[in-house]
Image (cartoon, rainbow, N blue to C red; front, side):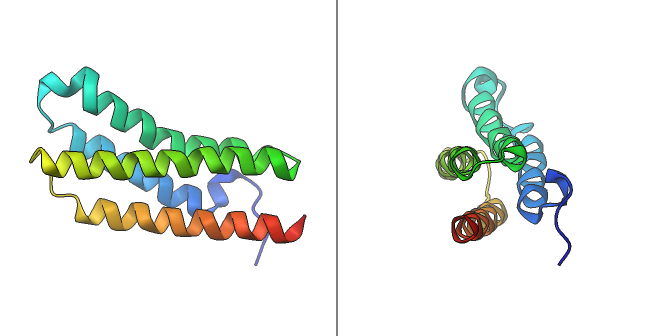
Length: 119
């Protein structure tokens, strides 16, 4: 396997970016009164996942890398809650998004495990 030259080469980043695009698509149909509430919070948390993966990619030390990946993990959990809330409020049916988010979480955990075993 060839070493990633950019964060965009990482499958975990690609999947996380796909998740962000999906979040933007579904939240576009949320009620307008959620613009500064759930829509804003959900999008911010979703963007945080690939953004922190990208930032962690360029960090040299193990602790720095893992700190950013851990922040991404926290944002994944936050998005899981927003998916549950969105469904409970009948704004969306998001089973596919939960599956995608779980995939991002698993790949990110594997990536973290790989970093832990290297250093």
